[in-house]
Image (cartoon, helix red, strand yellow):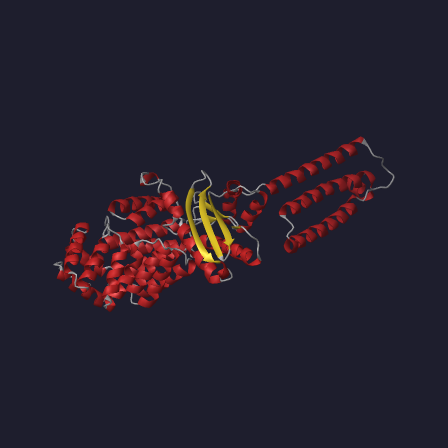
Amino acid sequence: MSILKTLKERKVGQWSLAYAAGAWIIIQIIDVMGGRWGVGETLARSVDVTLITGFFLVVTVAWYHGDKGHRKVVMTELLLVTGFLLAGVAGVLTTVRIGDDPPTGQQIASKHQSPSRHTAEAPWIAVLPFRKNIDTEDLDGFAAGLTTRINFGLASFSHLLVVSQSSVEKAAERLSDPREIGVAVGARYLMEGDLRAVGETLRLTVQLTDATDGKQVWSMQSDYDLRDIGSLELEDAIADRVIASVGDSSGAVTRTLASTLESKPPESTTAYEAVLQWTVNRQRGGPELHLRARTALERAVELEPNDAFAWACLAHVYVEEYMSNYNPLPRPLERALTAAKRAVTLDRSDSFAHYSLAMAQYFSRNLDAFRVAADRSIELNPYDASVLAMLGTLISFSGDWEAGLEITKRARQINPDHPGYYKFSLFYDQYLKGNNAAALDIALQINMPYYYVDALVRVLAHVQNGNLDEAKDAAMELTKLFPNFETDFGRLGLTNWFFAQPQLVERIANDLSVVGLTSDWTID
């Protein structure tokens, strides 16, 4: 008897087809339930394993009993059925176990990886659901809204990776210890928030913790009127401040990570470490740190040629080379434009790539192209205060003072602990308008004693207010900080920055001559 004839007589084909049709219907039902009713993947996979096991059982039973009464139960059949059942049970248990294990940071990275980001080294941040001391509909909604807004905002930064809110919430349902939640979702940094309503006061406490050692990296505490929690303006103001303080390219996370790399030779850094070293250079400045950053980033783009953020940082370093005359090499702006355009090509959603392109275009005096890139950078990430401050300043200097000042105002609002350079455009606006008392007040607030522009704006403000002794003292500080001021400032300070502001250049030149500082201030 042929095998085909035997299969036909025992109706194995009919049984198999009938079972397959039933299994297909069950799978479709599970898919519908998953989409509409939230049936989990673990249950769906368990059903798949059960149906596969059932198919082999049906084939076995059909083989031995398809021709009714022709066969009795034999030992071979019992062994096969037992083996299939044991394999099915083992498969279901394994599926459940896999489903219960939360994804690691690496697994999340591989699922959402962008080729232009450093998913292997970049730190993962998990924003835990904000806690409340009382449960009311308004406070519940406010807490949920803050968590969502902060999670969304932090994801706007190219140098950070944010664990999805749903993954964190699932882990928080099973675990109570924040550090265990961090391990479960593969996050190095944990953000926790606490909302306490007492009387008419709402006290908000937010902290960022390093899950590897439990150390607190950053925190803030503020009191608000409890009656305002229904306001989206309050929610936005709080979220923007938290996002900027933590995620900013000079924020808490990058400061913490970069502090461990200052002594590491640039020739031995990874691509991501090179980016972090650049943040040190950007905040502290100087030719030595600039050279370290340039060396490290040029090596980084050789190691990771598809890393958009590394290319963007390198473009910015080339711009600094031009505007500050640090470690000059031929054609710095040409190199900056090439690197910035490469960054944008690699990742058009990277706000920092557009920022670096805007910087290169501005100092190349391509103001229309500068504005397009600047607006796109701000649209992609309105939370990076240091970027907002610089772009707002350059937009002001390009001639659109009103728009530029609004942008720098936002930068100061979302980062109340901002450095003094956030106020440079505000100073020059008041100085140019002849509001001398206001200009002097702003100049005295800048407080960057190791940066020559701090002394420069005080010279200008004191001259305009008739304080000649104070102006001469500030001029001495200026020439000490910038020994070649009279020979180099015309190009580095005026030609580079104020090429679109001839009236401002003329006023600066006149006021500097009052304290004996003269040179050729002509804009070339």
